[in-house]
Image (cartoon, rainbow, N blue to C red; front, side):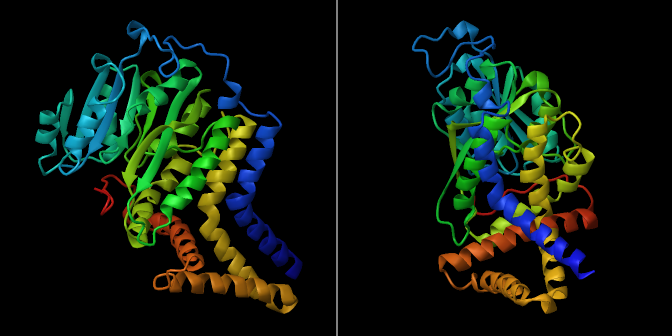
Length: 394
């Protein structure tokens, strides 16, 4: 009996360490051996129909695709004018760029300001949720490529051209760019974590494709756009769903955007908790967990980076429970229990002690807890529909 408990303890502990630290090393090793089918294996085989947007000095505009840039907005009067003007200023022929603002039942001046700022199409839709208004905008869009941005994301002038470049290969279905967070962190280490996460996604992109994108800057082929249920998420749903259709989802770090960081860790916890409410529907309902349609290496990525990561709070509970049961089995289990208790204590003290180890512990515990809290909210209130912007990011 104690042997079985010990196996569960060490297996669960190992999975936690692996998903956070071992997985990036495994990606690096696999890429070093030339395995996979991602960006590193698409180079040199351009089969798309339009010319390079960032390398050629003379670009034939007649061959460039029409692009629709869709901005979902809910009460964004503070930033929507700047966002539309930022889109107009992008280094892309204006006649080939359709700017769509899809208002999700805004009760402020978002719609009027977007029209005055120069958006090509402003949709004043009833309150139905971010995904629902994105679906409506995608259905009305004229573009061959659909690009998406948050209302508070500021794109660099060449960001759209950089984002479109991988689509010259017809096997690419989705591309996400890089978001840099600005402003004081207020104890929120999301910026530092995001830089690490982007390095991991760069390795994924080179190997078999990313397992998630980001809402600030991304694009998808209009022909492959997937109308999702309100509980869905473009960030999580598109990459794996397109992989099942045989398309690559890539990360383009040179397509850069900036956003304001959530100014406190409490605010970050609330944001991530809201994001996690639809997790069950995506993993089970939409089929992320189902290996059918994936390449073996892409499922390895999904399992390691998504499924294990989402299981982390429950693995921690298993580790703690089995550790308590094993206390009489040797000194090592006293040390492992002490480590877990110190992690929790450091996370509690991290609210008041600004030293980095305490801040890291608090960030890790709260972000891990957000997964379980989101699932708890899903169980209590059902699938999500409406969305709220994070406080302090406008």
